[in-house]
Amino acid sequence: MEVEGYKQHSIFRFHTRTYMAINSIKKRQHSNVRLEFIFSNGIKSRISDSLVQKNGVNLHTGLDILIDVSGDEHQGKGIAEILLSLMAFCLQTPYRQIEKFGEVHFKEKPPSDIKLFVEPEVQHEEIAGNLSIVEVDIFKEVFEQWDKNHAGDNVLSYSLLWFSKGLAEKTMLIKYISIWIALEAISDKLNKIIDSSTQNKSDDWRGLRRICENAIKEYSFSQLKDCRNKIIHEGNFGSDETNEIFAVTKSLIDLYIYAMGKLLNLKETAIIAITNKEVKGLPPLPSNYQIVQRSLEYEDEQLVWDNFPRAKLKTERRDYAEKNGEIQMEVACEITFDNLNNLRLVGNGGIGYYGEK
Image 1 (cartoon, rainbow, N blue to C red):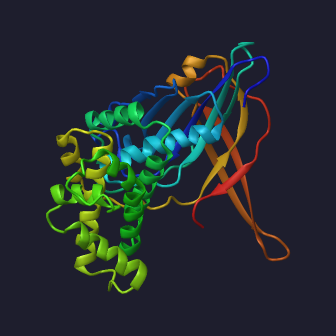
Image 2 (image 1 turned 60 degrees about the vertical axis):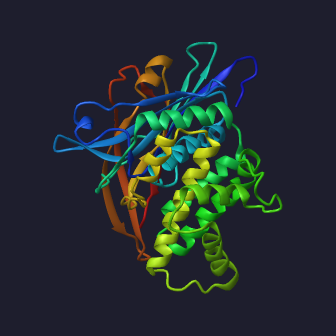
């Protein structure tokens, strides 16, 4: 929101649970490398591993994203979504719904009028299992091509979101349809950039068909499309657990990667590296956790960016039964902040409960 008479920008912090990671297990024990990207329109972003320490070991709980934008939360979340969907494309690994865990609003003057709204660290649970470690060079190439040629392209943005949704699906038939929707969204763009002089220009799928002929060996495009017709129009593809639907879906994922790689003008080596990634699903949801929200004031903008305030929440939970038999809960909270001695509480806040019951 723009304040009359002042220029304003905001830093938002978002979090998602995902197997995607920046650092390997070994690296994250002594450092937490963070990736920074500046969009051509000036929006600044940073992605880092979200870690929790247990018994002296740094464990992965997902990804944190900082967005510095002259806009509102909706725009900040949209930028975070683009970054995560591009990373999901690079790693064939989806992510859970993005949650906001902090926002800072800065005005050009007066310098003391800086408001910070931060939600203390939830009790993140570590994510067990093999992580998908990003190859930084490939991710940077994907980001740079996106930002240079496709920033603001809603068609490609929604296509990537459908692709990530497909990766997240456990049901193979729904996974297949989601990937198909992602492909269908970009088919017209492919038709325009691929030389189709030897093909029937009345064929609405000629771009995808050409890529499939050159890149996919297991199935022809007609075979992949027939599977789509059987699922949507006939509903008789067969058991969701058949080997055929697994194989067909893997080929469809590879086709999407080659197609999007073509639109992004990626190097062949990058496209092949992405297709060789193992397809991952979603990590489990965490248990219940508590969030306490407070309004705070802080003046050092650079310090906020370098070390976004993270509050630790210590809770004492008491359950009791009321006369009507309902179970009620009280939580006493103590909040402390790391490395920000000048940070102070300004007002009262409330407690919210999130997660699976």
